[in-house]
Length: 214
Image (cartoon, one colour):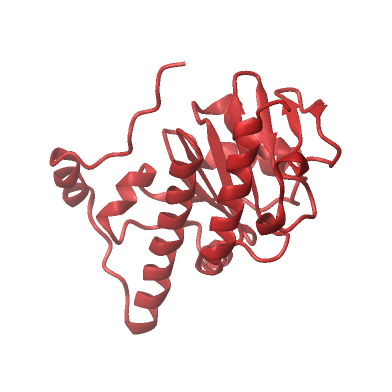
């Protein structure tokens, strides 16, 4: 079995995503890259019920290399991000607070300094139909400049990492930040950190881990 370990990891992360409430039913998808091959979750299957053999392997041209099931419909977005970033893993969620922010905002402002761990202000990619090259390009643009996460208008969120565990944690942080914003908005207008305040945090060493050189 090609990428056996990676496919096992996809299943483990799928269960963690479902357990954390970051996906519902068959929504959301995950992938991990190894060289020129990508193991990705299958389309139309609940992420907490996958077995390694359910996860197809494609190449960077989206050609199916191994597997019986069809790759996720969002595979074009995953491949676009692998082309544009040094990411080794990608997690796409349909989390509640992320979807709320993605339907109402053009970006998630930095209301907490941990926003820096995702590369700063989280952009909301313009809406396009799921699974299309247009959506893939919109997400690629929203992730430009070293971002580790983005929201997708009227859709959900996406996070990248050096491995699946880091991508998962970035997705969880994104949902936490969105949740803080939504809850704060219910009480009053959230206070947004200034560039100067964020710069002082950076001076203290808070920043996303660097990707290894390709």
